[in-house]
Image (cartoon, rainbow, N blue to C red; front, side, top):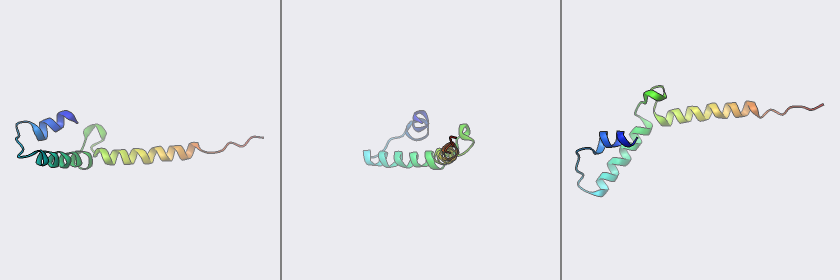
Length: 71
């Protein structure tokens, strides 16, 4: 994310105040994590990918929690 932030938001830009820079940065991070499509993640945003991945992991854990009966 570091190079993307630098290239897409900061490079060559002057912000009128620290607060303005902070606001713009937080807005960009929200966009990056929740809206921007990432090719390496199957063209979905990181937040959506993480949610899907967590659901898959939960389903796997539920399947692995079966109790084996001993005779």
